[in-house]
Length: 319
Image (cartoon, rainbow, N blue to C red; front, side, top):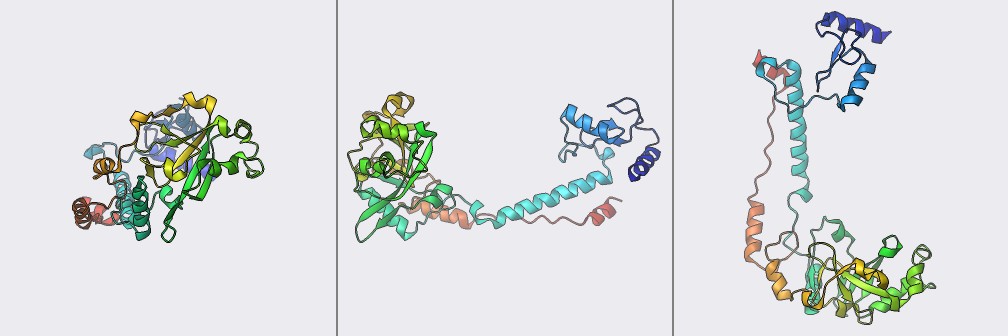
């Protein structure tokens, strides 16, 4: 009953000036779509026009409109758009993780860890602390033992790409021993037992270990020696946070782009020069660019707060 009253009032106000409904072409039009300006007579026709034309029924807030066609409704919509923009700007300004993506000052534990990795000829990089990979990293350097305990991700492509995580693996252990907890049916987690049965049947002799080559275009890999320790396998390699090792069956070797010996990673001194101005990674080995970076952060302009008057004030100014 209430819908009929609204429909009659709309019909009286329109006075037939909208013409026929452009969907059914039967009844007098009562409504105009705010977005595509299609004239409709009822809710069914409104829904039909949205489905056929793919129209959202919402006014395009940034569409051009002549001043002669500008109404109070358009002014109110623009005012709400400015309010929404102001809220987004203030939210962005209050979020410290969005001010910048890199931090030039490493915590003392990460600084010691990177120095220890460098002494082992491993080029270790850290992502900003708000990155997911950085938060998940559990690698640490034991200062008393002078040993690195690595977080290693093992990915098994021929087992639905399942990921197994070794959170603190001793660097002096051979890769074959570290991987044996997944290849030995007695030690393997029952959760992965069924999916890893092809790897377990192939055994260590039928498996290749590939280290993901970081800072290379595409998915490229270094082939590792399972008889050597984790420490020896990471020599002259670039690691971002922690190593990711793909465990591949030998007869699937051709499906992976494996780097040759002539394409090995550059030495640390060369790679550090190349990455000197790369602000994505935490590199505090140089002082000149660090001072420039800190100066730019301190002199960074804050987002201005938009001073938007009330809607009633805008209406009075226009009149």
